Structure formats: C-alpha cells, structure tokens
Length: 265
Image 1 (cartoon, rainbow, N blue to C red):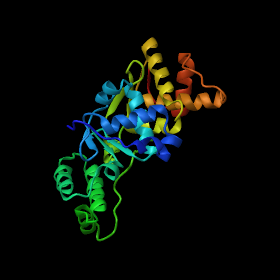
Image 2: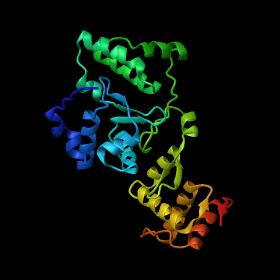
Image 3: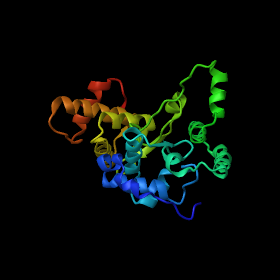
Image 4: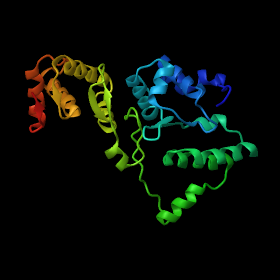
C-alpha cells in the first residue's frame, strides 16, 4: 500500500475534466487515484462495498459512476468476478521509463487476477517502453496472425461490471437492488435497463422495490416486470413517468408485453 499518491495540478485543467466531469465525477476520480488500495499498476482489488463505505455513496450510485466512467469517459473498467478495478490511463501519467520501474511493473502484472486487465497492462508496458508485448506474440500464435475478438465490453452502459467474455455475461450473478434490496437483477439485466433508461433507471428500480415491500408480491423475473411496466407506461403516458400504483395496472402491463411470465398472486 502506498503511503501517498501524487495528483498533478493539470488534473483540474484537463479538457475532459473541465468540459464533462460533474463535481461528483471529480470526487470519484480523485478517489480512484488516491485511495489506499491503489497499486503501481493502477489496477487493484476492491469491492463495490469497500468503495461505497469509503466514499459514502450508495452501491447503486457506485454502479452508476463506474458505468459512466467506463462507457462515457472510457477510462475505467471493473471486474465484478475478480473484484478488480482498472484505471486505464494510469500508466500514461504514473509510470516512468526507468529500468527499475519496468522491472517492478513486470513483477506486478502476473499478480492481476482478471486476464483481460492483465493483457491490457502488458500492452501498456510494451507501449511505454517501446518493446514487444509477450501477449501480442501469444495472440499471433493462437490466431494465425489474425486478431481474434473474444471480449464483450459491458463497459458501462453496464454499471457495475465489465464482463470479460460472452460466457461471463450469461453466467453473471444476480444481485439485490433498490431501496429495500429486494429487486433481483443480473449484471446484464441491470446494464440493459441503464442503457434503455439512462436518466431514470435507479428511480424505476426503487419504485419496484417499494411496491414489492408494500404489497408482498413475488415475481419470477424482476427485469421483465420493469421493462414491461416501462413499455406500457410509455404507451399510455408518453409525457409522464408514473409509478406502480395498482396491482391491476402493473400486471396488465406485464401480461401485455410478456404473455406467459408467471405472476405469483
């Protein structure tokens, strides 16, 4: 663990920071650069709970921030499976060209858990020191000198986790969301909800969470419920954003859009 981290004054005049970052973004970026879990690589192990506890933000807010930093700013990725975060421009500003630094980086990269992050770091090392990446050599041997794309970047459109391949997307674990932590969504479902409703996804989840808490209703697929309600609401009330007011409205919307989804009475 580093005793301290240096942040250049140019951070405050960077074009992206000045033109695009909100005050919340600036705070979160400074946290990413200076928190006690940071390493030489700019890739370190940390859980969403740790980030939430240390910043004071809710988990849903952390997911939203990670999504924005990955999708809109393209400077961050997070692996939920490995509980690792990658600050993608760390090497540009924090790595020196000294031989000692190169040796330290080469020793640290193999300890990274996420294979995709490890590949990114090897390539960054090669670029920084103008050498051939060992990962590049391996890729050429495996693909016959043709690039093979296997990664699915659930960058943040996907709020919480950048999943490394298609199987990870399918197998991504469900998590509990909403005010009462009773709305069950997979990472992929949450990402799709954020993509469809970037301004209101958290509000929709909280409404469903409150509805479930108040009524005791149980549904087989909370994502289907959210999307069906949103579709029905958009058709009936295009200028407003209504809430889950009645069982009848909610179930009618669900049945109209998804037909055979079981609804427990």
